[in-house]
Image (cartoon, rainbow, N blue to C red; front, top):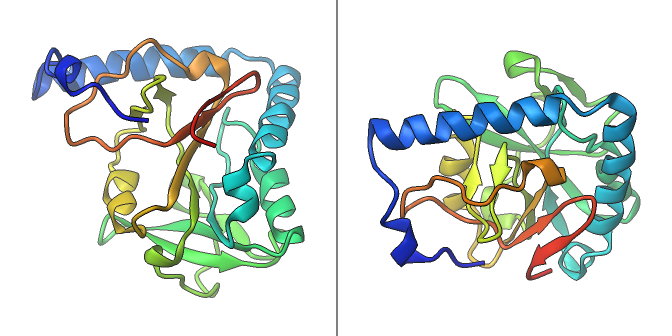
Length: 207
């Protein structure tokens, strides 16, 4: 996916851009939070099915996944599927001092995951550290995305700092509920886009 650089220029910068992002973030989170648990579970199963069907996922040897938090879709089935398929599964752990994500490989999610930064599930510190430039495929979390692949995160900037460290050509995939797909994400020209967006009903972009 490639953002339209000409249309990017209509977005304000500085405080106005931050305000626009905050408005979209709050509105989208409210819609996601309003989904009943049983509806989220059914939609999550559909998302996992679409993700494991991606040729890029099948071809990847090392995958960087995320662990779900609050009303996000449940990613543990995807973690288990990747491990069962012989992939190296990497998860992020927050280094608060450096304000960076450190990547750790796991082999047993039942034993190697614990509550971490802001109670978000993370790999244990003892899990092997993995260099970002060895990752083939990354699941990029976010609050909202648009069909050009623009991403609106949670505001901490952790993935904005991590994504440039991945090897060139690593496939960037977002997986979200349909309610998180918006007409346009307010973004600056330097904001990185994803290659593919998967929802419970559709796959957008290169797979």
